[in-house]
Length: 390
Image (cartoon, rainbow, N blue to C red):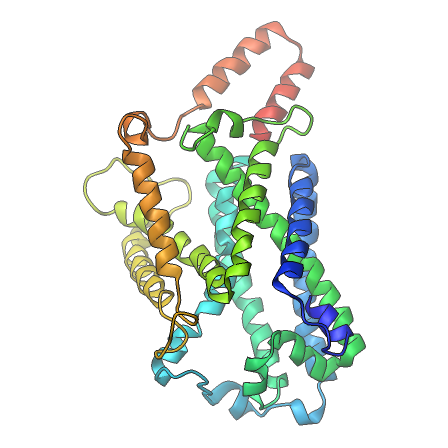
């Protein structure tokens, strides 16, 4: 939509209905992609990573070269000056500015969500999370430094723009160059969306395996052709379409969902991390662990997640109204309330039947040993492929 606005010289302004129509088409495309076989999806993920890195390098290198002199900023302006366009004090405005990089870097959770399709997951997944944060931090810092030096000094105009990033590109590359760069951004964003749906569908599949969701018997099915959880993919896509309807309720409603992606992750992570050291448990460190640094890192991590979750509940301005209010706390509270009701509901609630994650390694091993005595190597290889896809 931003590309259409730029191409029309600013005369085209998309409506909520048009935005939702594009969103719907994108979701259907993502459902099709995420229903493909695991081997194909693995190759696509490599393409996604390469394109993202190339786009970041293009911004880091090409933007400073193409930016006219009037939009180039000094070192003091780019790295030292603090421009506070909010009504919050400077200190708290700086803390609020952390929301954007935290939202971007939170995708490290995707490594966990698809861990059941990873080889040597006990080591590969934590390394994947660590490298995802490190690479995103380094590349993201370089991109932001490039933008800070090339965005000009009229920050209010950028802040009031519907697409500040597109406006920065327009100042530097002109209309045609911006459309080319923006086309690549659209492609990478499309790829990122399919990756998010892929990770979410695998999480739904894992919960359904443990009978933790309604309709688990239907969600926990592998497609006999692709050997992937197509039902879980379709379910997530439909849920996304319903959540997308919040765009008709205004910016604050849909922004609450975006903020929930951070706060929800922090709640989900801080509880088990803290539980590692709270009370008695039989936790046994895996092959990847921090050793003596586990407790200090846990303390810092939990405190940071709790603090930043509270920050995400605040509106962008201390003097706000119903239209400018941050409703993340309402959405999170509603989600938690529904979860509690679902778990403790009399007779049918999870407290009456849910026993935790269902171990299936032993049953898989027994099944494989039986098949070894009955079928040839080709059939065994097929069985292993099905297990790996799970």
